[in-house]
Image 1: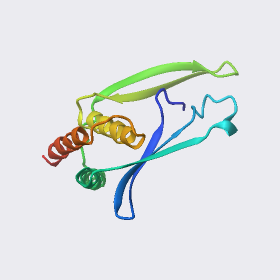
Image 2: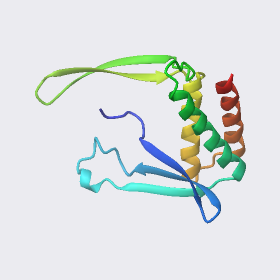
Image 3: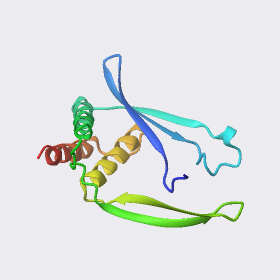
Length: 144
């Protein structure tokens, strides 16, 4: 199903003793591209401060531990479900849904942090200090 927002991935890497965020995205939406063979992977890398690198690692280790718990309700899965309908080329109506977390939920805050980490990797003017503070606050709330 096509996404209405940019799709991206990022990784946190250590190369030659330095810490980086590598951000990856596509040159255009693969789903809407007229020629999918022309869609290119765009990759950028930015060095991270050591304290931010360590907090990102800590956050994702905690999230991994929590998602392994069968009764885990710690991700704050509150949000809004949107329903929409489309018609395919054969005239068949397709009904689907998408979910959006509330911006102030734990998951909504995690999404914002991930967006900021990805933006850092692209060299955008995102404060590493502010991102670190957001991660620390989220970690604190997740541990409660």
